[in-house]
Length: 114
Image (cartoon, rainbow, N blue to C red; front, side, top):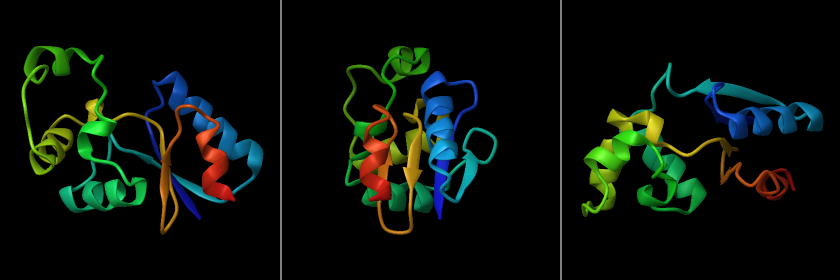
């Protein structure tokens, strides 16, 4: 079973969802803007991704440019920022019980279902 952390307004997130549907794998959808992640959930997701919080920040978002660009934060601080501003989280993220991948580029998803 997989979980897709999804934003239906995002073209890349919709592409990841379509890919999962085409592969006919079991998955659930977590619209993380409607049902935000907790700090613990995000921290566990980062472990599965093997990434730091800064690695999943959408730097093209206006809130990033106006409030966070050129500022230094540690990983715990970035986790708190991402919880407060979930729109900053890159998408989609697809996770299993033990690992996760960023769905951009879409080819990353092949790694997850192998």
